[in-house]
Structures are given as structure tokens and as C-alpha cells.
Image 1 (cartoon, protein in one colour):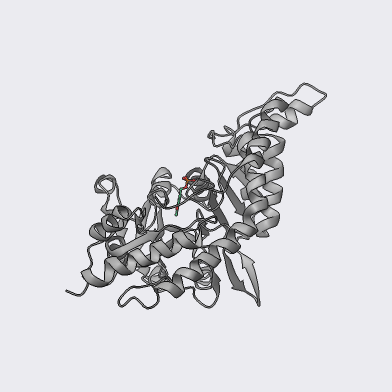
Image 2: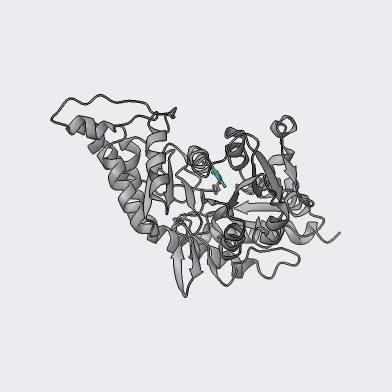
Length: 385
Ligand SMILES: *Cc1c(COP(=O)(O)O)cnc(C)c1O
């Protein structure tokens, strides 16, 4: 059986977790602080704040942007449902715009039309690790004076050409970027998240909110020679990462350059091996983008049945997943407010016709060849009609 994904995790992470467990300090503390410093350095960010997952990261980033009840946030429906949900947590309404089919990313041309006096933020997504058009989005956000939040859940290590050089996603180029360390992403801490920002005041807010709105951190209180009484100036949340997770994350971060090198190599092999299959739509990087290939997502030729192709691959021992879902079509959003600008036809089409292929760093050449051969076998006879 060839799985869809496989985390790169072994004795090194187990040893790091063990070290923390035996240290006597297991939740948010020195390991979280070190992970934040190392993460900020990796992406080139001014500030990084670790949280419990990317969904809570998105919630805090939107709150820092001032998003509240009655506001609107422009985003995509074509994303993991947490993107839209984070807007609803703030009591705001998601305004969905369509995607560009080649990159599965938000179409910047449609964003401008979606902006109204109620728009409080733009929430863009680097879908499946492919950078979205930040140059355009930063310009639009700047022109309207609204914050740009990047859902970079899948985007760790992806790059964008910016002012003459390659920069990492999460610098951030918008106001804040949110990352996920769920096992389906490129590096994992089991669950976990990180927010990077350019704003010192946002960073201070994140730190307050993630720890119940408490005025002093545990580490400060613990190391103080004088008795310290904390206070709670505002309502916060418990969105902490544990030190056990952070220690695992630090080890994962060390592997990241090699993980990305390998993912890019595997994506290249798919690109070459599948480029000859008639009608198959392969993902492509814009000139100014380098993906980390968190997912390699293909568009099936017209007339192919997605479920049937996926089943045929599964019957040959190959796990796949359908492409990204559309939040507006889920039952939850029959009850929730949202609106769209223009049609969401490309988003719906992508959901119905795309398939994610297995890709993980220790995938063997033979396994990858088995995948590409099975795709040829499944597509060529069945799509003739
Ligand atoms: C995975 C994912 C999330 C949610 O991340 P969690 O860490 O699981 O909360 C949000 N947005 C996108 C685009 C994702 O792929």
C-alpha cells in the first residue's frame, strides 16, 4: 500500500520529547521560546508566536486585525474549512472569491470587487504550499488600508520572489502569517501552530491572548525573586503549545531543508512522468513562486469520474485524496452567513475534478513509478469515451 503522506519523524524527535518530559517543565516554556526564535529565523520574520494549531493562529490573527461581528473578510471557499471557520469565530462574514485553476489559489483580480466598507481583512491562502500572488494582494490591501492575513498552514519553506530575491513565506509579506504542524503538513508536532507578524503590538497581543489574557507569563513568574500577582486585563484563550511539542518542532525544523529538497525532487518526477497524459492538468509554479509541494494535486481530464479514478488507484494499492473542498458547499455553511462575489465555478470544478497524489520524502522511485503507471493505466482507457 502506498500512503498519501508519511511524516518524517524518528528517534531524534522521540529523544527531544523525552528530554522535555524528564525536565519537569512540560507546557509552554523555554522550548516554545526557542522554537519561536528558530522558526522566526528560518522564515525571516520579525516575530513568531507558537500556538496550539493553525486554526487558533488564524483566529488570533483576525482578532489582531480588528475583525469583529458585522465585519467582512475576503477569502476563498476553496480551502480547508478552518479558513472560513476562523472568520466565523470572530462573528464576521466570509466573502468568498474564486480561484485560479492553475494554482488553486485565490484570484487577486476578484478581491478588489469583493471589498466593501465592511471589509476588515483579506485572508489569503497559500493552498497546498503554492504561494499565492502576494505582490498583487499586498498592493490591493495597501490601497484600501486593510490588513492582509496569510493562511500559510501548508506553506512552511515555500518561497516567493520579492524585491529581487527569494524570500520565505511567513516573513510575512502581509501583516501576519499562520502555520500548521498537523501531520498532514510538511513538518509536524502532532498538532501545533505558529503566527509570524511584522507588528510588535500584534505579537504582544498574541502572547496575551494565547495564555488566558494573563498579564505575566509562567516563565517570568517562575523565575521571579519577588512574589508576582498576575491580572487578567482582557478575556483570552487557552491556545498554548506545549514544550513537548516545541521540542519535537525544533528537531523537525532541522530536517526541513532536506524535506523540501526531496519534495521538490519528487514533484519534478511527477511533472515529467505525467506531462504526456492527454488532458491531465498538472500543477504549475508561477515564475515568482517556489512551492514546498505539501500536496501534489492533479486535475483530471474532462469527463473523468473522480471517485472512480480514486477507487481504481486504491484497488492498485495507491491512496489518494480528492482535491481541496469548498466551504460554502458544506452543510455547516447552510446555517452560517457568507456571500460570494461572482461565481465560485473554478473552486467547485477543482473540488470535483482534482486528486492529490502520494508524496513524502522517503517515497522510493519504484513506488512513485507505480503511481504514475497506475495513473496512465486508469486514465488512458477510461477517458477515451
Ligand atoms: C490544515 C489547514 C488548516 C488548519 O490547520 P490546523 O493546524 O489543523 O488547525 C487551516 N488552513 C489550511 C489551508 C489548512 O490546510
